[in-house]
Amino acid sequence: MLNAIWETEGLQTVGIVVLVFASIKLLHLLGLISFSEDSVEDELELSAVRHRPEGLEQLEAQTRFSRKELQILYRGFKNECPSGVVNEDTFKDIYAQFFPQGDASTYAHFLFNAFDTDHNGSVSFEDFVMGLSILLRGTVQEKLNWAFNLYDINKDGYITKEEMLDIMKAIYDMMGKCTYPVLKEETPRQHVEVFFQKMDKNKDGVVTIDEFIDCCQNDENIMRSMHLFENVL
Image (cartoon, rainbow, N blue to C red):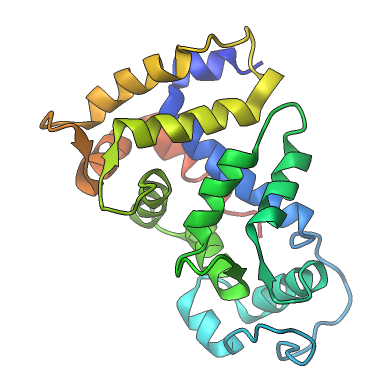
């Protein structure tokens, strides 16, 4: 039951954990963490895809994945996404499978936008592994920067109370009947009110990246969640 999580660890921790855990599920459903014993080609296969990813050496330099890991990740990505890119509908389909008891479409939309760093309506292999590298192997600072970007829906460099509420409502909608007792409609706003006041140190109505990181770094539950999935790959 998730009621203990909501009440004792705080809504903010659940948001971070769901972010990382949902990304792991994305890997699984794309077939990217089912490692095969088969040999893997030394170079990325590029001939059959519309989008041509960067070379292995460049991606290895830009991420914390090894050459072998990148080869395996790309093979799985290519098998599931022959065009070389993932669109938002694919994200929504994946999370609908992961959370059939709820409505994951809004959360998938927000998460897709966080991965789609150039905002062109698609997530390439490069976009995917760059984000994944941060979520799985980045420093605490890098992970919190990524999480801040997720919450900063309009990308203006600040998190408003309404943006935080939108993300939290999306998480509640996605979890659906997994929560017990069933959450009241006003519960997300009540939790956001409490946590926003904690984050907004200067009470100016917005949360800056520095306020966000400082608050998270002083929350031992969030810090613990930052290291949960570091050895997935």
